[in-house]
Image 1 (cartoon, one colour):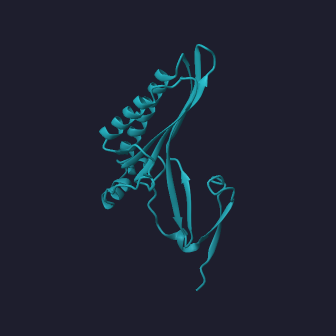
Image 2 (spheres, rainbow, N blue to C red):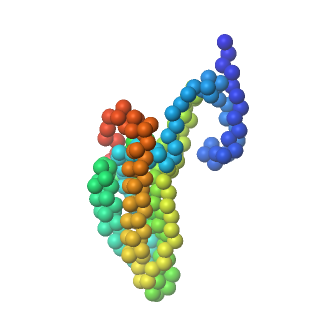
Image 3 (tube, one colour):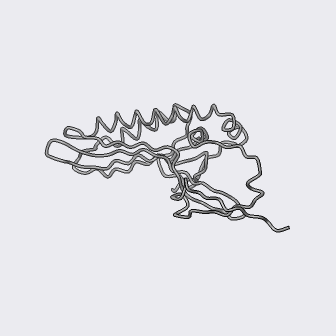
Length: 195
């Protein structure tokens, strides 16, 4: 018996599929009951984080990079999340990279202007007889920040606030029954790192 396919219009996600507006899916995959973990709840699956700081701030406007990295690492570890000081080579629903990007510089002799973005990167896969892989983020926060002489205090305050929110979202996600079931059924494994 031939496999029947249905054409699905993906008007809500054309960017994720690099501009494709339709995808053909086998009919049997449409009728299988599936548990669904929402984007927000998926944070509850995170057990391991590769912590990466990307400092693109010039003019000595951001000099406390190591302090921010250390405070972030301690906060995550105190919440039971294993932290690696390098990018993870194996990204899964249980392991992700958390990137803290700082961009900016001196706007005058007395002030600095910059932005900070804190986000996760996850690899996603779908298997409909063909494997489709793409990267996505399930947590992203950004701010434009101005500081007198430096961005240190503002970047520290902002990163602490966002990391606290991230940790709270992970804890909240773990309360989801489907997330809890997946965590209990999948042993905690150390991810591969890039080094």
